[in-house]
Length: 152
Image (cartoon, rainbow, N blue to C red; front, side, top):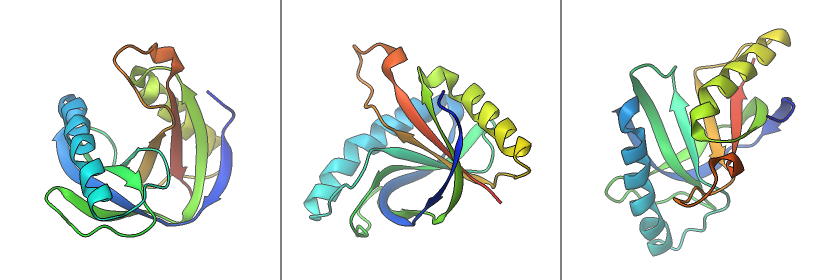
């Protein structure tokens, strides 16, 4: 994990698939979302401007309230499961996690502890940016995930 830092981020439009799903169904949700997003985005002439992400609302319990997709150069027109969204403008605590997705829970916990140690507190919305695209034959140690926790 890299050293946490505080960063000001600007709002960005996104193309996303939203859902409230059991945590055990997250892989299937991501697979479905990333199978429909590229066709919708390119079919509307919208440009993807960054890597895939997942934005979560509220703490992860047995279910996750999330949207997953891509930042874009402008809003998409809703089409099937794909809708327009946005990453917020805010101050975030940011760190990059190196390794498998299985380690993300512990990485989020360490980032939360760092935030508290800075005299700040995180909000109910947070997001992950998938800096490396996973593939079936890759070494999970090669995955890089940017964690973004809005703070006040």
